[in-house]
Length: 76
Image (cartoon, rainbow, N blue to C red; front, side, top):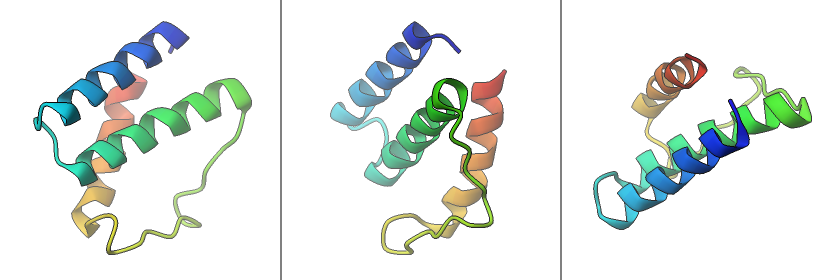
């Protein structure tokens, strides 16, 4: 994914959140996925799913499954 693609994704996500088209938790989840994919591609920093600690107050448990689906969609 090019830096322009990432920029467009973040800009669109920010716009969606600003216009109340996505919830705060969905915004944070998608932003995290985009930034982690950027880290993995350019900085070669890899994140293990098993070692992540989700804070229940921050992210719903259903969002963990959504994160996998979004990562797969972004990788296409």
